[in-house]
Length: 114
Length: 116
Image 1 (cartoon, rainbow over the protein chains, first blue to last red):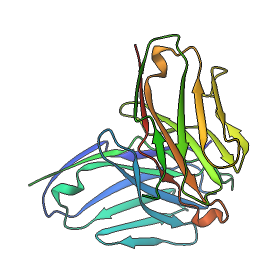
Image 2 (image 1 turned 30 degrees about the vertical axis):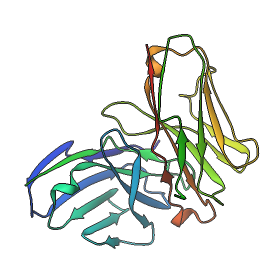
Image 3 (image 1 turned 180 degrees about the vertical axis):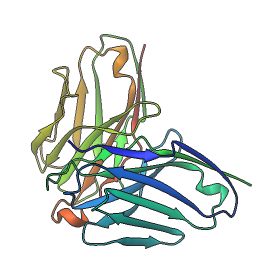
Image 4 (image 1 turned 60 degrees about the horizontal axis):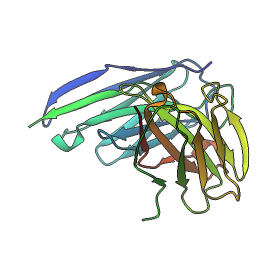
């Protein structure tokens, strides 16, 4: 059974700092892994999807990596801004090569202070 | 706006009442998912459809919950005899579902249910 864990649960950084959010998963037989952003009381916004054949995916100041062998993914945010403050969630398919629903971590709540 | 839409955005009901939520997916997306999220937790999977067929249901989906996608377009999620434990954000997502490796799920804004 796929389990997704995110560390830390909360992170506070000063504006301009580079930071890394961590995600680990137990079943590496996955097609992809997604990172999402969620603002308070809102739905989820897809940030990046990394295919299982890829090691990295970049979008603007965001870079996500995937290491299936170790069951880990990281989300790197460069030059953080107060507008980056939100909860970041990673999600993986159920594992065992199956498609379908996503299994989510509990998220990392990021606060970027001006 | 061509994103996933959900209606209503907020619902307050009394325990024991029935409620129904609607989700309109992105046009041409053949997969539609329902998730439930409680405070401080990540979303938990409830059920998903490929076209009009309901392919999987979570054990979280008790007999009081039913979901439909009658014509493979919009979907409804009904909760009968609501309980206070049903209070949560109900999220809908959709995806193309053709290529597993690139199958990005796009989420709607959610329906927040409060059961008094």
